Length: 112
Image (cartoon, rainbow, N blue to C red; front, side):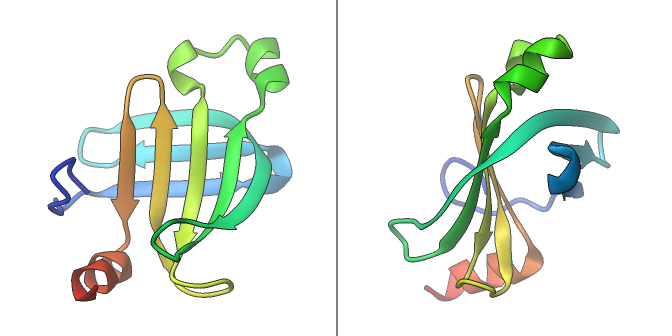
């Protein structure tokens, strides 16, 4: 989702490997892969009533593995409801705040 709340078509892949404490992203259009060291933070309902599973940078693993400062951040998987359908993924770093919607999420948010 663009900053003006318009939706752009992207070809992005996300893999939350909770057991290994990693989030992998892959921009398939630009062939850019990133890896973040994460840990579970909490689950919550946001202001729009959507259910979120929140993660943050695992600072210990991040430091031990000498990762880039650009990989520090907060991350969330957004659902329409608890145990529901995935709306998208939110990534907030020092350099950007991005929301990537699934096709379901784009349709769902267009209805409200």
